[in-house]
Image 1 (tube, helix red, strand yellow):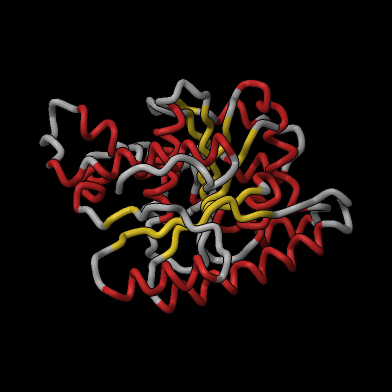
Image 2 (cartoon, rainbow, N blue to C red; image 1 turned 180 degrees about the vertical axis):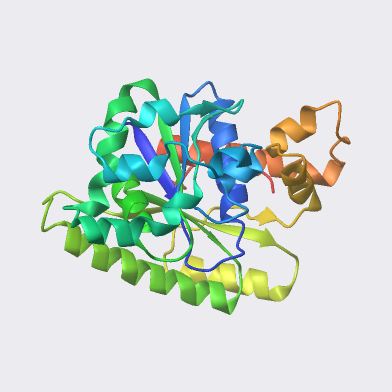
Length: 278
């Protein structure tokens, strides 16, 4: 499989899905073939963000069927959204853990990775957006991607959450090595998100950098335009270009550079790339 990432945080409300949408769009605008997999069955997931919410309900084949049945094909679920293709979420994913347990599914954490092998040659990048709560969907996202992009709020709570995430990833890595000796899970980058100007933001960043965390050299600032883009069911690049929306204000253009830089980090596999102004 080509490079895959999952965006994950055990803390809700840190802008994970917005970041996943716009990082995927930035990769797509670099002429990369990108497939986004939405694993979150809740309202307000990435599928809703891009205007495909009607696919999340109803009696139709969905990703849960692929994870449960070996003969189901993920390719038939893929829809185009503009800058990237999407495997939409579905409300049926909410029951996937109990259904896997009832069927005694073997190696259930590896089901998504196996399913994506069928389309691995068709895409350059896979972006996976699971729910925040640790469950079998998160396990599948992490096993499939092996690389984690972590949005974080620059507060004491956010700093503590990174320690917890590292412990969780280390534990999972040890567990999955029972099935795959070469299995590794790594944090590609920690991305300060919804950043403001108070001292607590600067102090928390310094603490993370001192502790050797792979913090990006910029933070994504809190901008209302991201909420406006979501309301219009667009990524922020589409919003900036659309004749049906307002022009981005001068101070909002930093967002485009931030997501383009994140795309560069994903491409190069390291936060040690040329800095952009933010």
